[in-house]
Image (cartoon, rainbow, N blue to C red):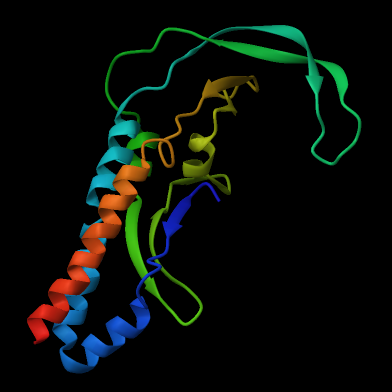
Length: 189
């Protein structure tokens, strides 16, 4: 799914730890969940920084003969496809769409019986039933020209969700989560 990424905290049973701490000190359990969300601030900042940049404009297009390899196992075939070239990137502020996607980015803690994770999600603005956060994550998408002329134009998306999140950031977050758990048990002793 393009609108959520998560990783599990493998070495510990997050649900059991939170239940155990909640039994002893409910305020500490709430504080731990809050700290788990704060542990993802670096990743959220990287995603928001990616959204603050403008994607390039579509500079032009041409039709080219391409080899198409179907995913369902059928034989490859040649077909004409439209190829788009990048144009100049505009300067200026953040669009309303990008700012709405950025505002919807969240970190949440899941400690259910079926799944344990720290998950990144975005609610994303909806337009005509489509989650625009998922659409904007694509490499390219098409949309109608504003003003109702009936013409559709291509636009480059901006991979903001997975691309800026490095393995190093994930590891630092996992280390912070383990440190939060260790600190909580140390404060109980």
